[in-house]
Amino acid sequence: MAAASEAAVPMAGPAEPNHGLRILLIWLPLALIADLVIWFVWGPHLPPGDMSSSAAGQQFAIKVMAVMAAPVMAFVLIYAGYAMITWRTRDGDEEDGPPIEGNARVQFSWFVITTAVVLSLFVFGTVELVSANGAGAGEGPSPIWKPDGKPLVVQVIAQQWLFTYRYPQFGGFETTQLMLPVGQSVQFDVTSLDVIHSFWAYQLGVKADANPQVNNVAYTKTEHPGQVTVRCAELCGLWHGAMFDYGHVVSVAAFQSWAHATRIKMAKITKTLPAYALIYTPNEIKGLAKFYYQAGLPGAGGGYYGPQYYPNEP
Amino acid sequence: MSVPARAVTLLVAFLAVVGGVVFVVVHILLAEPPTVDFTAGHAAGQPVSMTIMTDPVNDASPHPDWVSYFVKSPQTGKWIHSTIFQLPAHTRINVTNYEFDSCDPLRNQFNGRVAGTVGNVMSVSGEADGVNGKNISLVNSDTTCGVAHTFSAPELGINVPFEGVLYTAKNQCTQGPCAMSTTHTTTTFSFITPGPGEYRWQCFIPCGLASVDGNGHAMSTIGFMTGYLDVVS
Image 1 (cartoon, chains in turn blue, brown):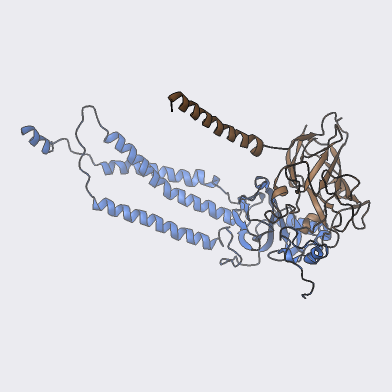
Image 2: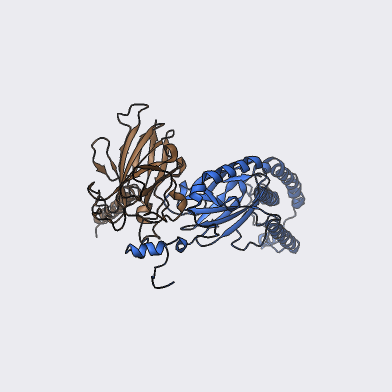
């Protein structure tokens, strides 16, 4: 009985240190150092760089999120380490731990802090999306956020397995080269001739799905000259991995010179292209259905080349 | 069942599964047509002649109704069902293509241009409409017979549209590799190989009829309408 009574009464021991204060004193300088390193050392090298407004916006967003996440992660790691060291089981210690009880102050603090972090990121993300005119993502055929002024329009035409580009403000020539002037707002009109692709101009921070029969609009503004890697970011068949090319952001003078020269060089083939349109449907190919009908091959191409031809219809 | 019998059963089942996986990997996933070597005996600085044909049918494979390329072996002169060509680097390749397939309009007229060849031209003769033997740099498939297939290597900037035979032409090829006596067009062009590397090439006409709107089957299978140039030093 005596032993049982002793076990039921907690033994008086040395006063518990203020663990919360200890953890705070360890966490605070480490979190501060981590944030400073992330912002000033690591941040400028985070993807996708700052070649365009949308790329710089994405880099800024990643930096902000990293700076907000680092203290949280540091706290979790420090708390775990502190607990393992301070409250570890020592030799000969077979006593049960203290009972777990609710702590309204901790629970309330946790609720307030996590809510504040998430809601602030929600507001931040929304503002970043709006202020950067869609942040480089495709906004569909009717974009909500548009840049001021008149952007350079570049149509991106995806096809298994190649991107080509049309410049409607320069006579509508088509080319395999993506060339952009620096310091210029750009409107990408992205579409596909066959399956779903995705136009991903990495250094520009632009990624927009290329869907057949859909014009997907994405905006950005070039900020620095350099090379842009363009990749298809949607698994699109056998040579998906080889569907890439390299674009260039160049000076305004170099772009004007290139555009002028290419317009002349491509003049002959530009005449054979369909009129510039936001999407290209198979039935817009002039006389095609009639051609197949006359050849006795209605429906050739598995329906790919458009509707049937009915000679009695206008 | 005795323990040895159960063990043998387990072993047999295990081997059957492993064998099945190995068979699928080796014979289906890793299956490739043979590499046709144009480097053997090649003297540095000399051009290489490569002769290919494009057939509407293909009796040399399990898919006789798929359109396909064939290549003439530089060693034996026989037609080989392959689209993998080993070529010497920094060398002029003189290509002759016999086109036996009929024509289609291009899905993207941009692919009607001749690019990446010497002079950015090709020479066409045969059934092609009014261009016999001339060097041309563009095929307008809306106004001519059309383009049957293309030889395009995007990384190298090469795009050569092959004019096809008319649907109404007589004596068309019905068995591949096609006999030279059947109706065909002939296209010649040259290109310079770059440095060593593996460069994919493909046809840009959606000619895999009735499969993924023309983009399946032959269009997506190495050995038929796509392959690669294995350029070696």
